[in-house]
Length: 376
Image (cartoon, rainbow, N blue to C red; front, side, top):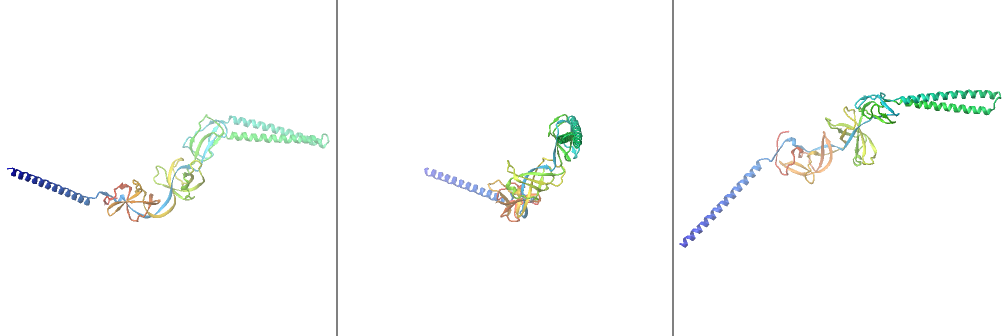
């Protein structure tokens, strides 16, 4: 009986081991089958599809080297209308944006005081002229008396000195009259240049001091760009070099040329002031913010769009398409330039014809398979 039980227990143990082994083999077989299916799926299904517009073929190009700048639009001709005499401001009618012509009467200063000073100076000149007439008559009489030996020559010398003094007094009075008349004429304020009123700084009825500012006038027909550049960037600049510039809202950049370069740096910012001449361009206002790029030369190199350069790694890199997969290439950067309105950068060691992923493709992991579509 005991022998039978031992054989039964042994049989059960063997059966359990056999079942466990069979189950383990079956599970391993299922895992291998799943792995094979996943590998086959990865081999037949692309991870990412890219359109042709997301790709760029590196080319050997003539790049325009340049210096980026920001600046401000300034009018070549501008002026401030100031009061030349003190007094109450009258008849000022123009306001910001109004057009004015050179020499046009824009306002007046109350002429009452100036008119009184002119009358005073006229009377003083009249009195001096009368004194001169008296002194001249006295001197003529003395000359006649001396010839008849009725008076001594000393009296003639005295009358001659009096005549010179009267003549000097008349000239001084006449000069004072000229000054008074000039002050009266200065009560009428004329436009110093043709242009438009940029700012109205005083109001009718206000008492204006001498040199008090009344209007700012600018001529928008001729504008220039005033830009401050660091000395290192200014080393390559020369008068006559072209530049592309734009302001917000412009359809496309416009062209300018360097007209002047300051021979000294600014004391505070240590910047070099550069002035760029603009061709006639309607719709520009003084003070607009400008950004652009001065062309300093050209370089021949294999280049790609600057936007294709990625910087989410310690070193900048490009995403290349090679043998149907994405490969990351650490970029050794060269000159930067502009071609057909697009910023380009030269990459050392990159072959012409290499396919580069543009910025629109986004970040793609190294080794990702790519399927190119015909969409552009």
